[in-house]
Image 1 (cartoon, rainbow, N blue to C red):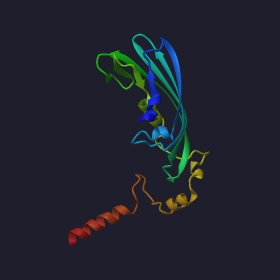
Image 2: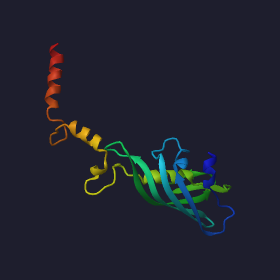
Image 3: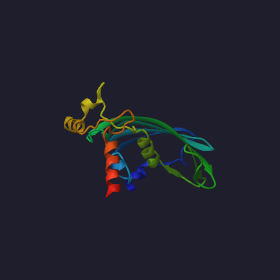
Image 4: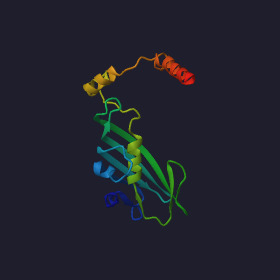
Length: 180
């Protein structure tokens, strides 16, 4: 966890107003977390901390590329990501998450480690469906050998998406079980 020490921000000695921090999030950063979907990355995090007497406002601006696995051909590709998120840190007696954007920290806290928040914001910026980027036919960038094999294994379906001939086959197999 020593790798994540550089993401500690000591806010006690800071003057009121805005303060900027810049971080590079690469594969060494993501290795510090157990369940990451990102193995390779080249991501820049620009963090703006605004300190006031009653709270801290952190603006996370994330931009870069991460290496993901294509859902269609299972080959690696580089995905551009971009994200802007804001968190509010209020001071209170006991630390807890008031909401997904508002976090209460104890009055005696002296620093905030932003690594977990950066990790989560990167993962939230990942697309749900991961496919090679491309022109009109995104499949053009996928592995042609895999695409050929997928087309060979393609099964005809009805309008509801069920395999056409399989329903009859299943009922026939059930009848044979009953007769035995």
